[in-house]
Amino acid sequence: MIIREFRGITDLVIAEVTEDTVENFTTGTPEEFAGASELSRTTETSSETHYYNNIPAVVIEGTGADTVTISASALPLDLLAKITGQYHDEATGMMVECERTTKYFAIGYKTEMTDGTPIFVWRLKGTFGIPDSTHVTKDNGTGANGQSVTYTGISTTHKFTKTGKEAKAVVVEISGDKIDSSNFFETVQTPDTVKVKSE
Image (cartoon, rainbow, N blue to C red; front, side, top):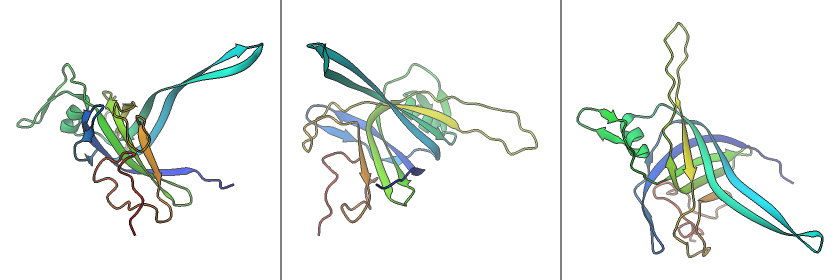
C-alpha cells in the first residue's frame, strides 16, 4: 500500500464550451484564469436500498453535479464578465452587472501527489457563479483579499467514443512515460483525445 496526499494547485485555465451535442463536443482555446491558492470539489451523491424477501437486495445510486470552489486572486473585470455572462465594455473598462447569459466552460489545472507525481485535470463542462468580494480598509498591516469562485460541473451531452458515455472530467496521473503531456493544456482534453504516447 502506498500512502500519499494531494499537494499544490497551479496553472488554472479555462476554455468556453462552444458546442456540446450528440454529434460534437468543441471548445475555444484555453486561457489563463487567475492565481489559485486552493481548489476543492464535492459531488452530489445519493443511494437508496430496496428490500426484497426481507433482505436488502438492491442499491440504487445516483450522482449529481460537482461543486468546485476556487480560492483565487482578484479577477480582472473583463474575465469576470466573461465567465459570469455579464457585459464588459472594452473601450471604457466598465463592467455592467446585469441579467446574465448562461455560458459553459471547461477548466483545467495541475496538482500533484506528495511523492511528486503530477496530476493533470480537465473538468469538461460547467458554469461559474458570481464570486463574493470583500473589501477592507487599509491599515499598517499586509492584509489583502482575493475572491472565492464557485464552478458547478455537469456531464457533457456528448457521448465519447472511448467510453460510450458522457463525461464530467478527465484526471490523468502523469507517471512513467504513458502519454505526451507537453501540450495537455493547449487544448481541452477529453476521453477521446488522451492517447498513449507514440514510440
